[in-house]
Amino acid sequence: MERLSLIIGALGNIISVLLFLSPVGVFQRILKHRSTEEFESLPYICTLLNSSLWTYYGIIKTGEFLVATINGFGVVVEIVFLTLFLVFAPPRIRAKTAMLIGILDVGFLAAAILVCQFLLQGNMKIDITGFLGAGLNVVMYGSPLAAMKTVVGTKSVEYMPFLLSLFVFLNGGVWTCYAVLKKDWFLGVANVAGFFLGAAQLILYAIYWKPKSSKNTASKDSEHGSQHEHLLPSSSHFRENNEA
Image 1: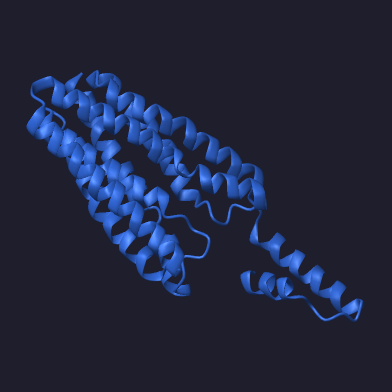
Image 2 (image 1 turned 90 degrees about the vertical axis):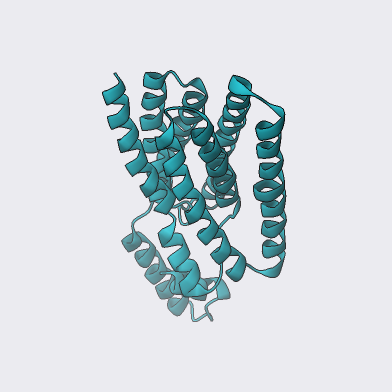
């Protein structure tokens, strides 16, 4: 049983690395356009806080080194992502993002670790940290709900990266199996939520995804219609052509 949990935990680490790195394409786009566009910072803020707490949990609980190592990696990745977001975000979004980082990733995290480290002892320290981690894991997995709302409103998956949704789904499933084998119910509750929310995102993706060829065809049809009616194309028409 211990060997099986180790194998599944190692697999979970691999999938988690892919999950943490899945927004790389988003940040390549941000770097290219020098703008965060309509992308949300909340998923990365929540992931940084969540990874930090689970790193601490893995350190203080015996036998959970796999949890500590992968989440330590996640902390480094999210710091890089959020730094890029702050650099290229518009002033209002930058201020909001910086405020949330200060409140959640610095203030709340420091307070939680200090209380657990100096005011709690033994299993109580582990249980409280696990409880906080599980709750924040649900928030982390639920944070793309804002992107899901955008998908439904715009009927476009442009701002909900497919790889992120896929790896949330896989990550939640694998770590749930690991938690059952280790009888770690905090880890289990946290990742069951990820499994179901990831599945919901994939369903939305299947409903609203459109191939690029369809977008190009629609753009050409619109252009043909504009020429036929001898009207000047609107600003939204130019924007569609640029996006295509």
